Length: 406
Image 1 (spheres, rainbow, N blue to C red):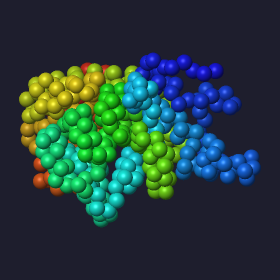
Image 2 (cartoon, one colour; image 1 turned 30 degrees about the horizontal axis):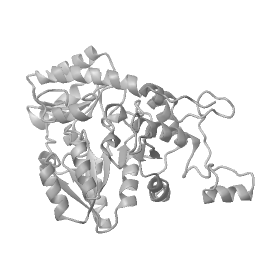
Image 3 (cartoon, one colour; image 1 turned 45 degrees about the vertical axis):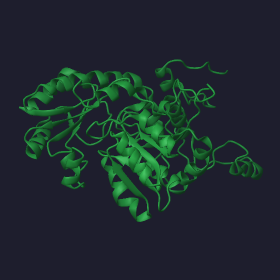
Image 4 (cartoon, rainbow, N blue to C red; image 1 turned 90 degrees about the vertical axis):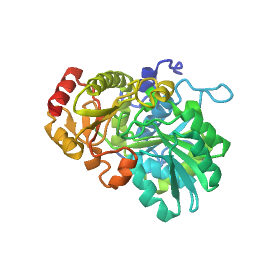
């Protein structure tokens, strides 16, 4: 029986991508098989040639991958239409990690001599990929202040080697935002491929495809999984021919595939995305308000505070300011490490997006390998603390922060 179109975001979270199991299992079973069999040589030939849909090898595809991919694509395209007014068609490819998905993105589009333009304050792994892995391949990153549209436009006009624009908004860990509508429009004028890291916001809070992005990237390890049970990444694209061709080829040959168990866990996590994000966001607003008036805190980076420099941009392109925040302690490195050591309920851990509140000190953890002068240029100071606000009772979160700040 054909399913009626789903009108609610949570309904898509729960039901999109699911196909009835032939043995009537409620959930798609974990297909713990490295390969799939054929009824005949002719069928095998049809599958390898693409004439027949079907599974071949788990490095290429799996029923568990397919369900998670279709669910994420449905969420990123929820309520969006193409130029003809039809529902926006997207394809997602699941990866073993977010960094695997980024590698596929760059290597599928960039060659020696090409450049990618991006901005200050990126996730540490993305930063190192730009500075340590791509340059020996002849691919360079051009880093500019992309909150300055004129400066960005000048950089693009001055260098025809720039082929891609890569955006991370909100950025990690400073929560800086860039204007998706303006920057993607600028990129389109110069025929640049555009890609957006939507990990912090999730498709519930922000949909880059609404502004014309070519690709959306997630570390699915974070809010999409939501429980810290599996590493993963996904690349979602609207050029279906490219996604099914060059992008999928690079993904397969690099061995960037996920695995059936992690994909199964991701699928289950996504089902509660909306209800989790509602609680995450409510708690984050309360935490930001508490920190904003605390005498030990010099500055709070939260997009829901009216004095945040990117408040207006975030209000325009996000449904809610989100679950992530960072704040600056007045006494620098010593205060940051002392605060981390005093936590009792909130967890000392990198990563984010889990049900529990995770707190890290970027200068000594996620951005430790980045030189101090580079970090500080991006406002990642010695006293900066990053918080992924969980779904615990907010009173308990605030009590723990209060005692740790004493």
